[in-house]
Structure formats: structure tokens, C-alpha cells
Image 1: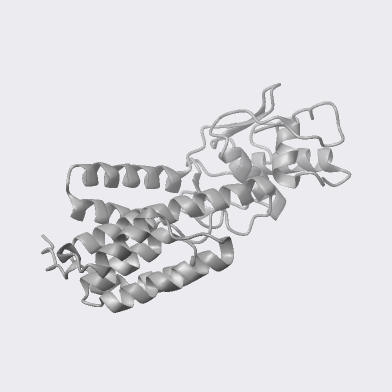
Image 2: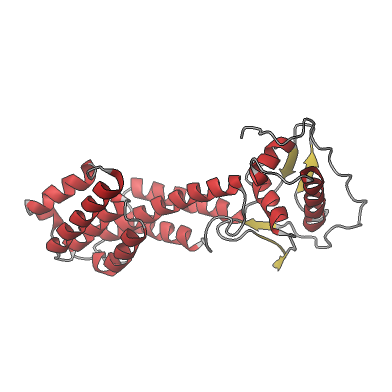
Length: 284
């Protein structure tokens, strides 16, 4: 990310590391980090004390650099944006020292490289597992195994414990939260499309109604709701859902629905046989 102006012109020196065995964590296991919800760090099943919210925000920002150094100015911009406190340099040094103590001698290394602060050897376990599951779901769908794709996408969704880095206030994390919310919705839409394709529309109509209410301008969700309604023998309700979304788009954006939604609307009007209810696919 770009470095910002913080009112200082020289990078902060790295705080001196604590002597071996002093002021560091006592556990031997490698910490496990999670970000799909409130930031969590644990060692051997025991949560680590990560300090005050801003210190936790510093850790989350450094974790997301994935072993890349982040300059002092870049860190200040990421955590405080254009309004850092007067003593921000002292705060950064204090928080880095606090994180070193929390991570302990057997955890990831938080060092000053000359180019910036660098956290190496940190494994964000839930992001790694989510990536594995989503990649597997996409591969299964490409191979035509819709049931497997749906199952893997469901397991990826179950990893979420709340919003991304929930509760941490920092400009960088706010942007990441929006990005991950979009990624989460995209995977959810893919799973629901698979459920409909497997003939399980009836089970997911209510969930889609809720999602459309929560994301009223997201056309893909309306498209899936309309398809699910058709597949459960409710084409009139599908047309009603389309009209409601059309009005919302017109009022909020002055725009018409996109091509995919219009095409489905036209197929419903001409009673496309492909939209008739499907028998459920047996679960092996």
C-alpha cells in the first residue's frame, strides 16, 4: 500500500528485543491466527492476550502483509489514516513491543528490517483453510460435481465467526472488511446456485428472501430468489420479486436491471419449460 504523510519524516527505529526468556510468552506451540471474525490468536488452545484494540489492529494489519515489510509511515496510515495522535511514534513502538511479548520466542518474528516492520512465519489458519475449501469447490464445480462443490462451499462459510477482523477500527481494515464481505457473498451465491441446481429450492427460498432484504441492490441474489421461486412452482412471486428489485434500482441508481436479471424475467414471462420444478438430486 502507498505510504502516507504522518507528520514525521524518518522511520521509527525498531524497539530493542527483550532478552531471552524475559517478557515473552511462555508457551512452546506456534500461535494460530484467525481473522474471519474477531481477531483471535491462540497457542496450544489458549488465547493469547493481544492487548488494547489499536495494538490488535496493528497485528491484523501486519498479518495481512503476508511476510512483506510495511514501512512505519505505511503502518501509521493503515491504522490511523490522516489523523494520527501526537505521540503516534511512541504508540507504534509500544504496540510492537507488546505484540512481541504476546507472540513469545517460539511464535512469528516481528522485526524491523530497515524497510519497515515485518511479521514472518505467521499462519492465518482460517484464511488458509477457506482458500483450500473454495479452491476445491471451484474445481469440483468445473468437474461437474455440484454436490461436492456445494459441500465445500458450505464448509468455507462455516469458518466465519462474524465480520472480517470484527471490531477493529482502522482504515486499512475497514477496506479489507468490505473486500472480504464481497468475497463471502460471492461464495454464498455460488453455493445457493448449486443448491437450486440440485433441486433444493424449497429449502432456500426463505434464506434468499432474507438475503435480498439485506442486500436489496444485489441483482444476483434476486436472480437466485426468482429461480428458486420458479422451481417451487411460484412464477408469479418470482415476477413480483423482479418488479420490486427493478423499482429499487430505479430509485437508488436511476438504472434498470442488468442483462442476466432481464433475461430471467423474460424467460418466466414466456413460461420457459427449463424453469419448471426439478426433482431433488439424491444425496449419496
